[in-house]
Length: 281
Ligand code: SF4
Image (cartoon, rainbow, N blue to C red; front, side, top):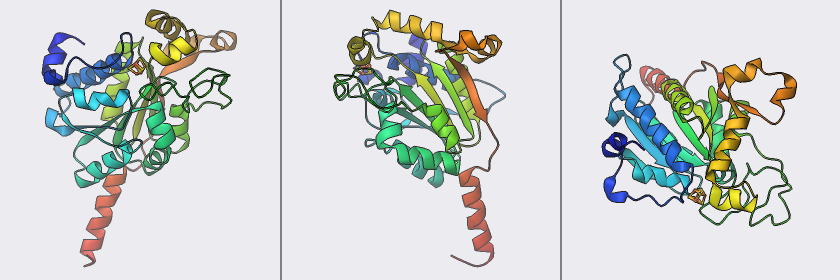
């Protein structure tokens, strides 16, 4: 992370961070800090630092809520979206950003994810998606590709993986997007759009875990894993120009769905207002 961002937005007394060398989590944390910094300094936007709340669950990724020096809360496993929903309902003016992992949000917290998406609660969920449970020792997660190895799948994972952005879109999320660690600049822009969206937004950011997922599956070191992202995760505009044959095995990054559904806390406040006018408590 550039030193100006570190000094502006990180809790220096929490450093050095605990992530392994080559881990993608630091890049995603930097993207989030950069996105917030650019929004705060954009004269056309009206963000202040105090508007932001960072909420995380449990896992390697969720340490980011401790490192980032905002109003922040490090919650329990899978429950970050539930805590974030409570904060948003208590003070709808806040921009509540959830930092979570693939296991945290789509396994243990899967129900919270789909129902927050369905309700269109105005949260921004940033998924640090490394295809595995890192902190607890390399168990397979809902995004581990079929056939890949994990400590709990020593002969290969039988399950078909979730595409978390598609899962959220299918549950009714009004804004979904995909980013990755290699395309950091593009991912920062996507995160800015997600934060500015009025409604539930989710950015599924493909990370790299060279320690567990990479080593178990012979993906090479962090540089090799980033080269894979460069070759296979393609910015949306370029993806559109590719033939069906060239698209095989590749995925687009960028905004995937963008709809203007009524935002949940707006509707909640309208309901309270209507009840008060009718004299109900
Ligand atoms: Fe990153 Fe994986 Fe190490 Fe966790 S185990 S810090 S996800 S490289």
